Image 1 (cartoon, one colour):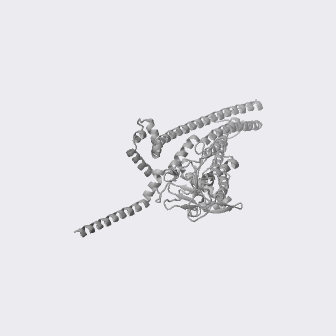
Image 2: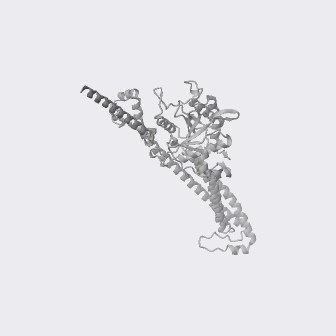
Image 3: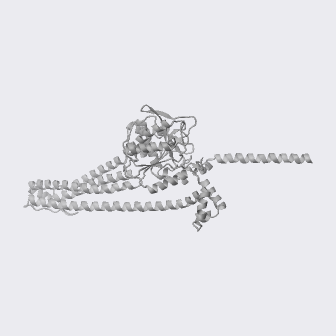
Length: 535
C-alpha cells in the first residue's frame, strides 16, 4: 500500500506540473494576441489594475478621487509614500481640467468668430459709404462738365431709361461723363482696397487659432477677395450713375473678380511646389506606398488616407512670431543614448540632441522654441516605459495650456534596431539618418481605434510627407521611409505634430548632433513655405 501511495503522489506532482505548464503556455498565447497587445500599449489596463488595487488597499483613496472630505495630512502622506496613488488621483482631476479647457477653447473660438463677423460688417458699411460718395462725385462731375444736359438718375429694376436718346443727342457730353465716371471708379477702387485691408486684418486675427498659419493665410486671401468683389460692385454702381456703362458689364467684371479670387484661394491653400512628373508618380497609390512609407503589420493604410493631392495641399506654413513660443520639443523616452554616450551625461543623450535642434531653430531661423527636458520613462531610477506616453501627454497638455501659441510639437526619439546603423553624408560629414514616425489610430483590418481618436491624422501625415519630399530634394538619403503604426503616440495634440526617430543606438553622438542641422533646415523650409520638391 505504501508503494501505491508514493505512486499517487508522483502522479499528482506530474499533473500539477502539467497544469502549470498549460497555464504558462495559455498565458503566453494570450499575451501575444493583438487585442491584449493593444490593451497593454494603451496603458488603460494598467491604470484600471492600479485603480482597483488602490481602492482595495489604500485607506482614503476612494474618498479622495470621488471628491469626499479627507484629512489633508493623510493625502499628503500618501502622495509621498505611494506614488501610484498620486498619479491616479491627479489623473481624475486632470480629466476634469481637460473638459474645462475644451469648454474655454470653444468659448474663445466663438468670440473670435463674432469679432471676425463684426469686422466684415464694418468693412461692408465702409464700402457702401464709399460707393455713395463716389456716386455723388460722378453726378457733380456731370453737372460741372455739361450744365445744359439733364442728368438721368439710374433706373430701378423694371424701369425704362432714355440713356440711348441722350447719347444720340449729345455724343460729346457722353464722352465727358464717361471720363468723369472712370475717374470716380479709380478713387472708389482705392477706397475699396482700404476696406479690403480691414478684412485682411480680420483674417490675420485667425492666426491665433489652432491651425494658425492656415487660418491667417485664408484670412489674407479673403481680404484680397473682398477688395476685388466689393470694388467690382461699386464700379457697377458708378457705371450706372455715369450713364455710360451698360448693366451687363459690371456683372461680367464682378464674375471675373470672383474667378480671380477663387484662383488666389486655391494657390494660397498650397505652397508646395511639386514637379509634374513627381506629382504623377505620387498620385499612384502603390508607388507612393512602396517608395515613401513602411507600414507596420499591426495597421493598414488605404488610398483615401494616403491621398497625395490632399496631403500636399495642406498648408503647413507658420506665421512666425518670435515674441511667443510656437515650437515645443520634448522626449517621451528621455533615457535613449548612443554608441559612445557617457553614462549620466545628458548632453550625450537624446535630450541633448533636442537642445541642439532647439538652438539651431532659435539662432539660425529665429523661432521661439520651448525644450521640455522632463523624464517620463524612469520610475524609481529604473527604466519603465509602460506608461511613458501617458505621463508625457499630461506634461505636454500642461505646457500647451500655459503656452497656447505653440503650434508645432516634436517628440524626438532615437530608434532601436538590432545590428543596424543608419548614417549618410551631408556636406562632407557623416550624420545619422532620421525617420518620421506616424501613429494613424487604425488596426490591421483598417478599422479606427475608437479609444485612440486623432482628428489630425491627415495633418500629421501631410507634415511628415512634405518634410520627406523636401529632404529627398535637398538631402538625398537623409531620411528613411515614413513608418506607420496603429497607435496614436500623442500626435493628436496639434495638427503639426511630429515623432522623429534620429539614428539608432549604434550611431555616435557626433553623427546625431550633425543630423540636427539639416533637420532644422527642413523644418524651416516647410513651416516657412519655401519647400520645392522635384524628382
